[in-house]
Amino acid sequence: MVSSVANGTLNRSVFSNVQITGGDGAAPAVIPAAPAALLAAPGDGAVPLRWQESSGATSYAVMRSTFSGGPYTTIAPQVTGSSYTDTSVTNGMTYYYTVTAANAAGASAGSPEDSATPVHPLVNVATGGSANDSANNPGNARHAFDQNSATQWFYSGVTGWLRYDLGHTETVQRYTVISSGDKVERDPKDWQFQGSNDGVSWTTLDAQSNQTFTGRLQLKNYAVATPASYRYYRLNITANNGDSSFTDLAEFGLLAARP
Image (cartoon, rainbow, N blue to C red; front, side, top):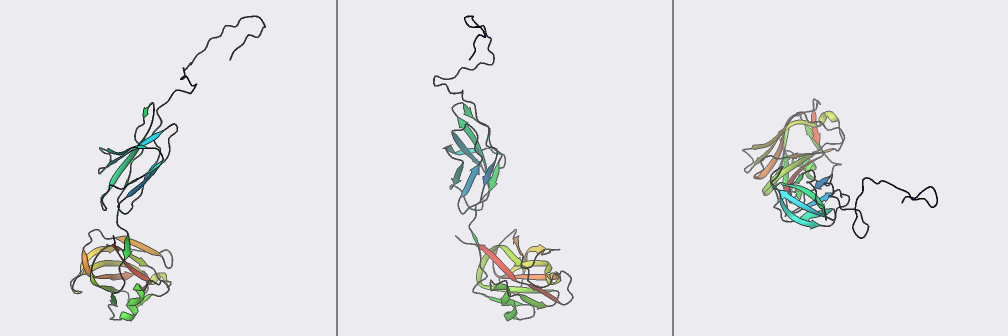
């Protein structure tokens, strides 16, 4: 709004940076920016997605690829919120996602890419079987599989193995080791995680060295790179963290997928 500073005198004004609005007086539509963040989470037969909303966006399109960087296929073209769950996935396969924002003026570029690999939940299958160790002390070995960190496998020696017989075959995909409440020096440091179907011939599925547990009753989780089906699993410890007489741990877990 402009006016003359003198009553009765016409005023001449010059305007710049003028925009013409629609008939309802609203500002012209501008293409929204791409969502600044996208999070993909692994589920069981699903990948839940969340992203940061873009100002001025009225809808979003979710795009997916099985290759990092695309090419992408649009799997949900008109999402009105800031989340979407992709249920058209296969467990064990990795998917890559990007999201665009849109309104009447057009669609944005894609958000930063994120990926997820849906999986069946993993559960500890070291139940209902039998335990033993290289001292042939099943009563002591059972403490590592009783799902009670207050007990421990306390082994007289700095090398030795801890074994579990499932009584049937399982494909263990991860395993866990929980340090005991005892001395740090008695924690296992170097070992092989091994599988067998006869309890005699062993295949090394994973090997670790220079492992340290920074706290008591600390859980560490290890992936099996090439899992296969075995009846027996063992932790073959070749060194502890410095104690000259004993090695111990609280729990040893065997994790397999369950539908």
